[in-house]
Image (cartoon, rainbow, N blue to C red; front, side, top):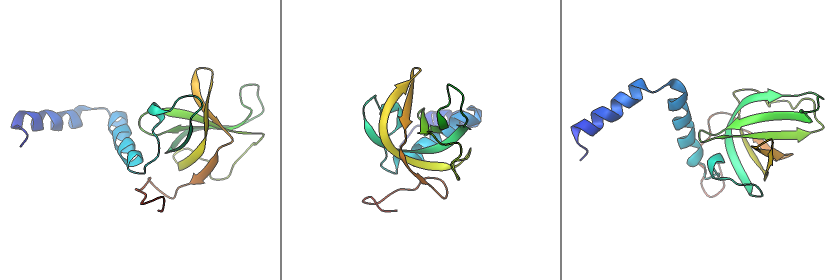
Length: 133
């Protein structure tokens, strides 16, 4: 049985931690239960499936923006997901949950995934059982 001091310390940490830290921890727990890889564990060249929430969406034809680029955050880190040659992708919006599958690369020192397969999720990620939802 945990000691009273440890329980009080844990409770006070939850009460004083910034909202972003608590949100990231909750999201990381949801994502890990889906069986998908976590951003903090991926390396260049890995072919992975990641699940997370879209934090930002950029589009346009500028030199740095080759198409639609979304930053996907899973609670452990973020990855840029880029669909080349596209100006808009319906449903790819800030705050939306998404599952992407592709090969991880690097661009500008950040993880990036080009032209991944994607699935828009209706809500927060849920646990999958033997690949089915």
